[in-house]
Image (cartoon, rainbow, N blue to C red; front, side, top):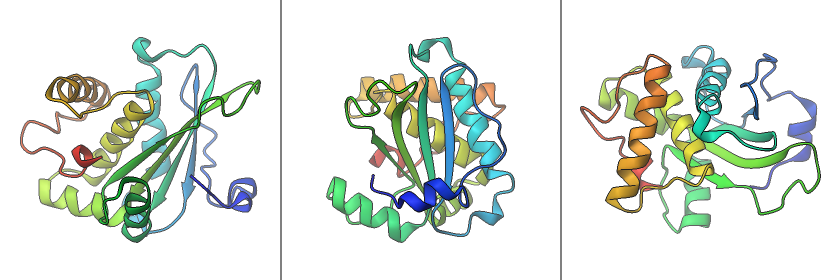
Length: 189
């Protein structure tokens, strides 16, 4: 995903908590667009969700990896969704795997980018009657699983991916998001 180099190097929109998931995954939170202020401690929530994935032995990596989570808005996500997926509508989360070989011999490599749409995330949380913070964490887990080559194109793939999400979310104290209602846009990736 193209980005302005100045926004990454300045640190102005990046997470400054200094807290990173253990072992192999480093998370960079980019405040790109939208008003995410209604979700308190969003950077820490994102890092906790990423740490829950990174802590799972099934996802250990031989090299350290980095992921960028961009907090954005519906307009930006709709444009990305139209350009890269041919779907001219906003969605809650998009995952962009890094290009093969990106990072070369660097001490870590880019896993990819996750882009979240603020208005859609908040609207879905209200529609589903769930805590927006929990929905945010669910979508980060969902996006990371996509970057780790999981998908939900078939029923079998969806069952495997959803089961992993439920397990990881349970480790964060978040109940199964699939018991009452399926997350509408997460399955429209």
